Each structure stands twice: as structure tokens, then as C-alpha cells.
View: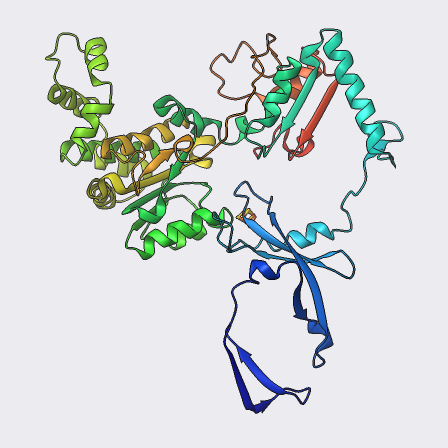
Length: 464
Ligand code: SF4
């Protein structure tokens, strides 16, 4: 670090001033004893000594890196800052990251385990110990397992963040008791992706994209999920064009080259019109399609009387989507025809560097919303931009998840509280119905524990 003494300047304390280069972050070798002057003591120079401990923000699933500044005198966390050594967030966080300090110091934070002291709903609680908590729940879990009441144990999670650890635990108990909030969140989008490629979420390479298309309440709206937001802007700074299909002017939409405020529910029509343009104008990736799309099976099953050639397949595909003209999509969505055509052509020219993403609102808020994800992935298939630099990968392709050394065998029971037979195509647990099922007496629970999920807030009518 260069130091430039400025003898002509004098600090309010009377000492000569010294100017240093601005440091982005304390270097790791100083984390065990980082010294800053106490701002409140100004103009006196009072040293504060901190231990800096790298940690993670859990205010959303992005899990950005944070550095906790622990006051060595009191042992208390004084502040959080972004950790530039974290490969995802690279030191940049949304406002919720450093605001983690508010949770640490929240006067309403529950610091101890509590148990109900009065009648249910009376609001009376008393402090208990972790030993009592573990004893109470472990014995109930054990009794349910030993007595064969395996469906009476349920773990209900909102943000897992543990890459399948609890599924293994429940599997080891032989219990079918994993519940999520996904059915009122992203399951429709996941379903659309899953039936295309077997992975249920996309992982776009925005930083290297030439064209980026984002749809509705996506994780990339720009008010959180900062690692994604950074890379969208990085791609833009390298020349990528950005289109955001969203009735709301989100933070990301406000930075976009094209804001497409479609009528909710019309997104798939616009995407299919774009797909048709790619096909008609021969902007699709012929080689990719010929090699990776199961067109032979399609032709044999749907058009056995036709010439079984790739060219005939493309002609029939164009005929299949004939009604999705730009005029039709414009009428459905409220967008201008020219914009739909212009964006489709840019997607075609971006080719394998077309990055795309959809998640909640358009998929979750409309009947058949899973078709939005399906139609969007269709554009990725047509451009051959799957798993390419600047394209979109199935999430399991570019993420390292160490395989556990032992996996329990699948449980032999089936909980109809989670997957009721009248919804055979449910993609995730029907968590929204759980309170009704319990009320109807369709099943009962001996142990129900939640994590990063608030059933009182979300069920039965919530959408988070
Ligand atoms: S994007 Fe914001 S809320 Fe999400 S992990 Fe990063 S800092 Fe936390």
C-alpha cells in the first residue's frame, strides 16, 4: 500500500495528514486483527480491533459472501461487509447483505428455545433448553418410527441450502416426510424445464451472452440475487442486449434494452411466435437440432406417412406453430409486432450465446404456466445455446455437488399428505393443501418441524 505524506495538510487533531490508496477490503492476512479508528471518537484516533470472520448471507438463496467484523473487546458482531474473495458475489451484495446486522441485533430475535406454556393460541411461552427440545422431539420421532407411523413425521423447508442433506436424513429414517413451499413458488417453471432436459432450473451464462431474455418475477429482477445481477450487467458492458418480459418495471427491466410489459398469461404466445420466426427465417441451429432433438421418434410417432427426414420435420414444425404469427402474439400480449420480430431475429443472431431465464410470476400465476418455461427452453434448443459459453445450462451441468459416500435406499412408504393420488402429476409436494388435509382427518402428524419456512404466513393461501 503506497503512502503519500501530505505535510501541507493537518488533521483536526493537529497531526500531519497521510493519504493512502483506497483499499477494497482488508487483506486476509490481517483478518485476525484488523484495526480501524473509532468513528465516534473523532477527531481523536482511537483504535478498534476486529477479528474478521468470513460468513454467508442467508437473506436469499444466492448465499453471497459476507465478512463479519467481530469487536475483539466485546466479542460482538459490529458490522457486515461484502467478501471480495467469495467467487459468486465477489464482494458485492444487495442491501440485505450488510443489513444482516439488524437481524443480529433485532430486539424481537428469539434467542432461546421456547415452549408453549398456556393453551394453544393463548400466546404464552416459556424458556426451555436445547436438551429438552432434543429429548422431546427425538423421542417422538423414535416412537413414530418404532411403531411404524412413518408418515407422521414431516420436515417442511422453504430455503434448503443444504443440497439434499435432509433428504438423506429422512431417507435413513425410512420416512417420506419432506415438504417444501415449491408448489406455491417455482414448481411450474421447474416442470417446464424438467420435461425438456431433466434438470429443473436453468443456469444462464449472462457474462458471456450476446442476447439475454428474462421473463417475469425471475431471480434476476435486480433487487436481490446480486451475483446474477452483476453478471447480467457484466454481459451488457461487453455488448449483450437485454430484454425483460415483465408487466412491472423491475430494477433489471429499467436497465434493459427492451422492456416487454406483456399481458400476464400471454408470454408463451410471444415465445412461440419468436420460435416460429427462427424456424421460418432459418435462424435456428440446424446441426444442433439434427443431432440433439429426437425428431426421428417424433416423425415416426406423429407423422409415420411422411418422409422421415430432418427437413420434413422442420416443415411440419413450422406448420404446427403456424398460428403463432407476430400479429397474433402482438394481439395477445399488447406488444408491437415489430418488437417481437426484432427480438426474435436478435436471438437468432446471438445463436449459442443466447441466455434466458424464467421462474415465478409468469409460470406460477397462470393456469398452464409451466408452458412458459417450456416455450422459453424451446428458444434455447432452437439456437443450440444449451450448455454453451453465453448460453443456458441445466443447473446441474455447471455446479459441483459432491456425491455423498452413502445414500439410504428410497423409503418404502408414500405420504398422501404430500403427494395425494388425485394429483398424480404434481411436480412437488402439495404443501398448500396440508392444512386442509389435516383438518379433514386425512392423516395426522406426530412431529412437524420447519426450517426457513413459516407455515402460518404461507399456508393455506400464501404464495411465497
Ligand atoms: S443477493 Fe442480497 S439477500 Fe441475497 S445472498 Fe446476496 S446479499 Fe444476501
